[in-house]
Image 1 (cartoon, rainbow over the protein chains, first blue to last red):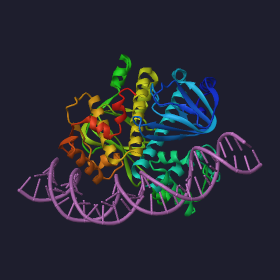
Image 2 (image 1 turned 90 degrees about the vertical axis):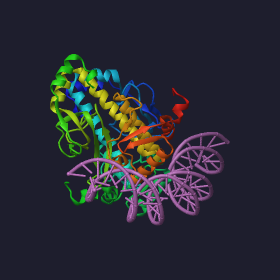
Image 3 (image 1 turned 180 degrees about the horizontal axis):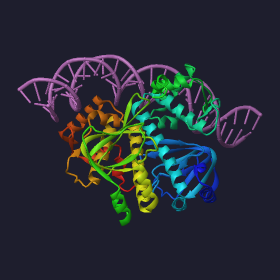
Length: 224
Length: 224
DNA sequence: CGCCAAGTTGACAAGTCTCAATGTAAGTGG
DNA sequence: CCACTTACATTGAGACTTGTCAACTTGGCG
């Protein structure tokens, strides 16, 4: 986000941020509350979820360094968010952010780009939930999280960090915990991945995972 | 959208729109193509969908009068769209729209509000796909479409218009056609709805549908 | 009026969920 | 620092929802 800003917008923006630490399990946003702040994860990780009329909950996403929280909310929060690993974040009031956006076109554009790529992520998620089997879902999710981790600057040999509980990953994928766990076991047995611990998984064969995730066609016809 | 604009923004905006008719089945946007225009459905209906690496397709939404198409796209379209009923739309180039948005704060804010409510809709969709059984999905979808129809100014006694094919509604709900069809039959047998034709369904008991859709809690505790 | 696409229904198979037990890692207090 | 306790993950067996394949019916359109 920040690297897309021009010098003055960047100065103003950074000066408006309040940094703070957060602990694991700390609640960062509550559904139903009014949305007065936008937060940017700087280190650590968080998850966002949403209730359906007070009953079942659906995990809607995982947030890592660089991700925005609350940017798409209207006047009230429609998703809750909780830290899944300790870290730091930067906050800015929505009021101040929209003031800045009024003054700095480059900030408007950067925000638009961020929001629009968030939207693409949600659409991927929709496809995962609507059109895939358990194995496909897990493979797709691992690849997506892996891509995002590499986009954050980590090399392909760094184990994939999965700080969320299996229950939450299962909810994200629209599966039950045992189903997710079995799928992991099968992928491990097929030697597609190795787990150092529950939170660290090394992808041993991205190509095979991509095949499982239904990306086979792309592999065969590389450019469409 | 338009009623949120101030007088001058409104004039400029409306003057930049090109109106045209579209036929049923007409392709309105193609995934992968560059996104040069934003379209607003004025009459009729359309559906949006998305492929996963050329394989399976997931219907991501249905569009009716007042809905925007292409507003969330980055430089390339990530979803395709096709008319499911003849109608009319208004187009504006993305370039012109962003020019106008630069000039008119009220347009920026209206766009933001529209996009943010679209986002809420997608989040509902996520919850439907991730956490609901077939019956719950169908009930939730019917209620959602019904609410949107009423928001367009139709009374509660007007039959719900379902111009999409059952196949597409099934895909939207992450179900197979036979499952959707069976669910409809069961709802019909329970007298929760009556179908005049495939495209027109009268909801006879919204309360019971809401219960099925997992909104029971809200019914018991009306305000939270 | 007939054709073809679309929707409905049936029988069966398969995948996922549920319930329950076991195993393992993390956190706490002595 | 170790035993204890709790939370979380894995695995198993069986039930049930949904998917699959196929026949049949309906409805729109020429």
